[in-house]
Image (cartoon, rainbow, N blue to C red; front, side):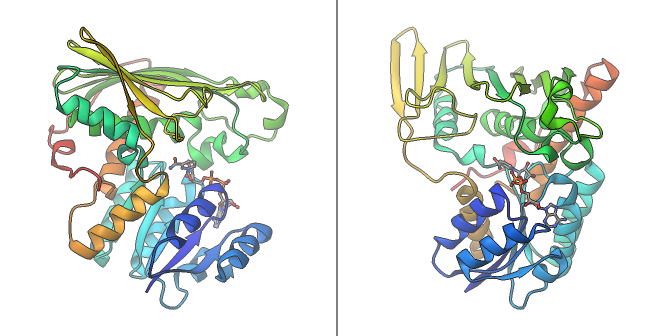
Length: 357
Ligand SMILES: NC(=O)c1ccc[n+]([C@@H]2O[C@H](COP(=O)([O-])OP(=O)(O)OC[C@H]3O[C@@H](n4cnc5c(N)ncnc54)[C@H](O)[C@@H]3O)[C@@H](O)[C@H]2O)c1
């Protein structure tokens, strides 16, 4: 039996609990939230012990794995506490607010011989696995150009806009897209340039925000091999505005995009039974259905458990989350300085990573 503690019982904590609980041999042993209603509700759903302090949930007898589902500000301290207690850690993205925090999380996991995984689940989602297969088959040629667009109303959660809690919407969201680009190209970013602004500060519901994180930005990154990434994000439109997202990949040989006729306002990363990849090249148009495969945190849970059981490298390991964080922070630095940020790591990290199961 593998016993799980969930720290943070909001939307993602609820999804983690559901994804863990459908697996055989898993028990949700403990849940924790500062909010008594949230922790009570998850505790009742799974018959788990409930705690206000994360240290108590982490140290609950027999816990093997801790799912960290709080705002990013707390990821580092909860993850280090869990690793130091000998618990494996599955931490929501973004990994942390700083590289120094990320390094301490990795060091704590290594020192205590436990796994640390970050939930950048897009690289295991079937629409993006399909894009990766097409790229590997040479359907697009090389280099590739990947363009993401995500335009949404201000987030329902205040923490998402508070810079000190989440880094802000761009910090929160862009990591998924950097991680996906690294997965699709198996290469590392050489430079990042970005501009950003804040739309949310005039919204009445966000009046209590102390320091707004950037909610609207254009980010461009050049990767080794000449691959180009363009990200346009706004999470600052007025409440009630239907969102719009798109992802397009192209190269010298052709292009593809993801669409979902039944959910035209879907979020990036979301998938339904009608999600499909549309491929276009000189031979015409073809459509590939993407209805199969794991989704959401289940992808990261499956890979974490498999890596613990078999010793196989986990594609969601902490070092991958750190790479995404490095690019998030490079984007923020570029926005602040108005300059291109050059990254000088060797182009080895992405290509070493096993594909998701
Ligand atoms: N992987 C994804 O696609 C994805 C999607 C959405 C959110 N997220 C990430 O998941 C994390 C949680 O987001 P969410 O949407 O569930 O937020 P949420 O606000 O719904 O839930 C967060 C919960 O954490 C609790 N909390 C805050 N500080 C705490 C502490 N110190 N100890 C215990 N509980 C604490 C809050 O009371 C709240 O219930 C964030 O890092 C977010 O970026 C990931």
